[in-house]
Structures are given as C-alpha cells and as structure tokens.
Image (cartoon, rainbow, N blue to C red; front, side):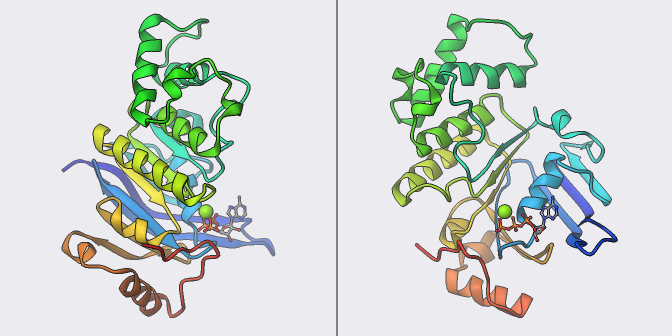
Length: 268
Ligand SMILES: Nc1ncnc2c1ncn2[C@@H]1O[C@H](COP(=O)(O)OP(=O)(O)OP(=O)(O)O)[C@@H](O)[C@H]1O
Ligand SMILES: [Mg+2]
C-alpha cells in the first residue's frame, strides 16, 4: 500500500525562548494510507488544528519530515501545497467569495487547481461540469448558479466550499470541525455530503470533530490527541466495537484526565 501522508517525528514550538513559549507538537508521527478517512478528537488546545497547519504548510515544522504521496513537502510553502490539499474550516464564511456568483467561485477553484491560464468567462463545458457537481449536493444550487454566494445559508456555503475543495481531486482533504457552526440538521446534511464526496472520489481525508459519535461512525480510523501527541489510534475490529463511553474511558486512562473540550458532543 502506498502512503498518502507521512508525518515523521514532527515538532512545533510557538514563540521559542520567550515567556510565551508553547510546545504544541511533540515528535508526532502519523502515516495515512491512500483512501484512509481518519477522524480526530481531543481536548481544546491539544494541537489538532496545528497538526493541519503543519500539513498545509502554514509554517515549517521545527524538526521532522512531512511527505505527501511520496514527495517530501517539508520545505514547500503553503501555496505550493495548496493545489494538492483541500481544507475546510469551522467558519462557513471562509473559503468562498461572497460577492461572486456560485459559478464564478467554482470557476476560480477549477482554474486554481488545474493551473489553467487566467481567463475570463466560463465555457459551456465547465458550466455543465459545475451544474452536475452542484446537483450532487441535492440543495438545488444547480438552479442558482448566477446567485451571489453571500446570499447562501451557512450550510449551503459549507457544502459549496467542500465542492470547491474537491472539484479537482486533492491528494488530501482536511476538515477542521467544518460542521461545528451549523445547526444540527444542517450539520448532518453537510456530513452526509462529505461522506458521499469522500467515498465517490476515494479521497484520503482527515476530519477533526468534537462529536465523538461522528468520530466513531464516519471513516475507517480514529485518532485521539492530547498535549501535541497521538494517544490513541484505532481502526478495524477494535474501532467497530468501540463505544462513546469506552472511548472516553480510554482517554481518561491514557491522559490521566477527563476529555476537556468546550464543544464536545456525546450525541448519537
Ligand atoms: N500561531 C500561533 N502562535 C502561538 N500559539 C499558537 C499558534 N497557533 C496555535 N497556538 C497554540 O497552540 C495550542 C494548540 O492550538 P490548536 O489550535 O492546534 O488546538 P486545537 O486542538 O485545534 O484546539 P480547539 O479544539 O480549541 O480547536 C494552543 O495553546 C494555541 O493557543
Ligand atoms: Mg482547532
């Protein structure tokens, strides 16, 4: 099996040598097979988003190595990684341009990722591709392609951002609590869309969530982080037999404290 992502003993400390020194990632190693869908849970400030930042190249790691699909990307800048890595954030307002139409947003994403020459106008062929992809979301957006994105609801915008991030198949999709700001029904809808897009494209994906039920039911592997380390990594049989209470108990055993996350949800 080929590895899609390899993190080898990655370390990151913010503000080293100052009173604000903060060790965030400590010798973190992680390997993802192609097609892995990994859910990530952990307390507040344990380094989950920082892990994504290290993969996206928001900063260089202090030590260790980052490899994407066999390529050493440790010292590539974020914009040099961006066309291979799709990323969504909690805030539905990030990732789309409100004053541009749905089709213009999709066109931008398409051009960026196909390295197409910058040009004006959208071809009939592209418009048809966008229409097909939008129809997959089942939100009726295919009939509103000339609407400004700023008019969409948070859930619709998040679904569109997801589509933009995967319009050209990324090597890796990073979802950072991308449904946390949505109401429960909309969150579920966006999660179902996520599942569908990941499955249909065979994407390799990491999803941070505060919903432990979702963490266990989505994907094929779950990791738990505490103090910049992976303290639990389960898949296969062990994961399919895992329950929310059992997982919380394991967290307690490994970290000597209760899981502390202000957004944690034990639902499902
Ligand atoms: N650029 C930065 N400069 C200084 N400190 C930072 C920076 N980015 C993150 N940190 C600190 O690193 C720690 C880990 O932050 P991170 O955002 O990775 O946590 P998280 O696990 O995503 O938490 P949450 O569940 O609250 O989103 C926190 O203490 C945070 O304040
Ligand atoms: Mg975070």
